Length: 450
Image (cartoon, rainbow, N blue to C red):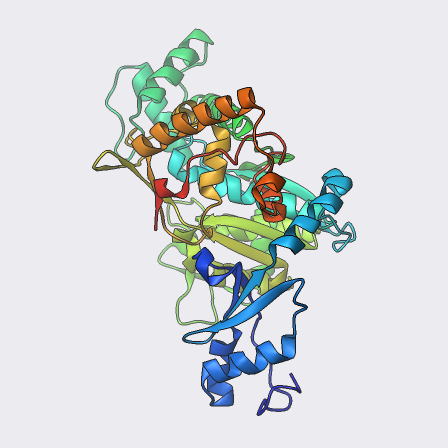
């Protein structure tokens, strides 16, 4: 930054993000750095952008740069340069884009982890695709990656799940706060056929196995696999007591109103063990991350969470920091849920009420390649609305177009004067080979709305 006029000595440089432009007319990539530098430099972003462009001095054969209001640097790659990349990419085959950056450092990616109290809803599948892509990228970068599914088989909701199955089995009313979907009746019927007694814990265990089998089948169809299925109940085989004792020795345990609390450095303490004896999700999160980052000793852990859990990140990092774990070893990616529109109606999603669209249904209607493509069209933290009817119609149209393309021999990207390096990368991240003919013919972006 010494070449940038007026930059204070020793000042930290903001993160430099190179992002794809939303409008192709603005080029291929965009840099917002001038906007971030304007306050420190006390200069107009447009002037800063012009100075940075002069310093960049891109080779004309590679691309060209331009300045756009209020202070963007736009980069347009030359078609000839893009076309020239196709040969090396094809020659490299599956090894293209891979590196040894990670040096086999052990990293865990925990994703999906949908509660085993019912079939996976379509609105929750976005995290499955995002987590799978993150794991694929880390593997390609040379990290040793474990993909983990955290099974919440412990706590009050699991008891309610077992009570709900028992109620269906005995033809009794569903308990307050219980689960009422048709699948509960199916589980109850199968439990009777298997000779499972009407005992809540046994029924809950049977139901969990039934649900996980269903979830695994859906994930497999979606192209998502896990290396390890970790059960929450194993945290309560001694680790929970060990961690609570450590926190108490550090002066971080407070017992009030019959509950056990984590004493925070903030103004708000958090409950660990409720008055009814059930641990909170926060407590289990602490125990789980001690297991991952101390017992199993992963260098880094990446958690893919729903955006509604954003408020839990800070307190978890504080707790593991107190226990001697460097908080930066935990990275949390937030994923917005997907709202689903069918016709003019927004579909309500509730596993407990037994309403909504299941992942199975959407896999049947639209297909796994199209779904993966949809979920990767937007940043994971961006809101997304999925139009079911439009997706079904256009997915059918694309399928017919692909069929006709195969009969006619198809069209090669080079014949169109297009460089497909970026498309190949997107196909690889989506979990489909660039030459498979699938994924690129999926439903166009018009199905999705910001």
